[in-house]
Amino acid sequence: MKKTIRLLALLLTLVMLLASCNVGGDKDTTTESASATESATESVVTTGSETDTEETTEQTEQTVTTESQTETEEETESKPPYRDSVSRTREELESMMDLSNEHFTEAEAKLAEFESLAVISTDYDAVDALYLEFEDMFYHIDTQLSIASVIYYLDMKDEAASDRYLDSYDKYGDLYNKYIEVCKNAYEKSPIRDQLFADWTEEDIKELFAYDPESQELREKNEEILVQINELTGDDADEKTAQLYAQMVTNNNRIAELAGYDNYYDYASVEIYGRDYSTEEIATFKANVIKYFSANLDKLYSNWYGAFSLLGEEGYNTFISFLYDPFDELGENHLLGYVNSFEGSTYEGFSHMFENRNMIFSNSPDSHQSAFQTYFEELETPFCLFGADGQNTSAIVHEMGHYYAALHHPDVTSFDIAETQSQTNELLLLRYMDGKLPYGVYRTLKGYTVYNFAVQSIVCVMIDEFEQKVYSLDSVEGYGSAEFDAIMAEVCEQYGGVDYVNENITDMNYYWRAVATNSPVYYISYATSMIESLNIYAIAVNDEAAGREMYRKLVEDVTEDDGFKSAMVKIGLTDPFSEQTFIGISALLP
Image (cartoon, rainbow, N blue to C red; front, side, top):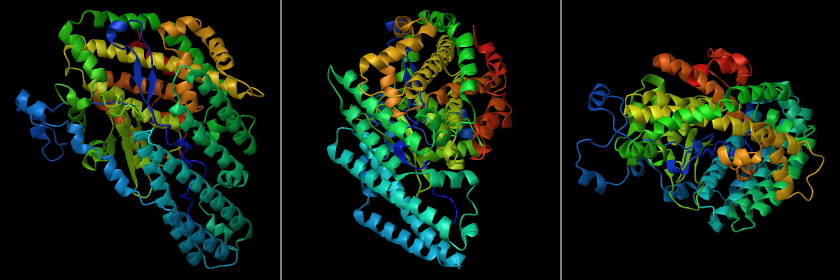
């Protein structure tokens, strides 16, 4: 019996962990938003441009279809957006839904049949055959739940979609609990235990017996809390969010306690995010972020904004459009040009998303506004949702990085690795854009991107410190806005104080509410991955082919057996927690 049903990692509380991270970095509202539009597991990047005619001719056998560049403006305006041709529709997703109570009943019956035979039989083939039948049923349910979650995030005010998602999630949790108990029983009683559990490590077995059904009940409560938060509006939304967050923190710490951990921060770092580094290493990392980024933030800002201020009206419009407009509304479809600039397996990975239409776009104000990538287990394919703020070129390229990685190694559990795979793709896009945009626009974009990554690294380590403090408290009973905002203000002291941070970096009181509820204990993985992504970019600046090859290795050669630190060394980078890593990107700093 292969351990393909992964403990804990399959629990869909993680479905949104690859959502984009939107960090405000405004210093001047004349830029329409000098905010850090980044993403993670989530990010939102969109591109829109045609490949050069000569390039297209050279790549006739491997080119993602683009619209003709010879069309008149009138013809172009009359055509639907390119994304309409590659996007699934909600109706198509609905047609893929067939989850019913019978699916759960049949899966439970098959699981019971497996258990009955597993505890008495010495016929491994017969026992394993029953397990594989259950596994197929389970992955069908798992995929159906993933589809239901995508449909929910297309319209979070659709009560029917919300109810279906939460009901399916609860039933999924009940089935998962039964699966865990059956595995425990089979491990203790089966006469062929060694064969059945041959693929399970000692750590897997430890996790199996540490699992408590109460933890899944708490996860279900947290999903309900998150849906409530998503529905909040009005002047009291901040206070209600803080109060609901307190409930979530209490639930999370109880989950950690059931698994034998002191608090949820420690639990999630190991059991959910697969981190191979300590809080001491994070402290060293944070000190380097302060030394190299915080201390240089004004210079980084002046570097990009100085170039920005020299742009004329046309350059300004080109710059802003590239950052924020849907990729296929630009004068040139740079996204497709970028895809077609690759060859071999990387090209195949990128184009797979478009050729198979494994994505959906939504402009609804009630949808998830940025972007995320999930995985349909039964279909063995990634799938991406792009909300209204997640259709620019960079956002799509970010999710395309997640997608490409999931095609090769969907079981990689390190989110630091996953975010390095996606954010490196954004920076390779930046390298590709050299010469594709007017010089002044490109210079501005390059300076802005490095500044943006610096801002996000700062914000992410601040969020991490905030969560370390919150989850180490004995209790958050009765906590609301005043108490949590005070913790954030304390964190801000090392970065110039809360007023400075809110005015010059981002509104942290808004930001912790947005990310600590949706993706608890996640954001240090954004920061660590940003630094290593910048290192690959620094290599690509001087040798684009070398940077691209390092990126290919990062996606294709790094497996689920690699931790973040070992993976970075494996592809030729330095330990992400050494100062040498920051020194490696010093050439990018002013």
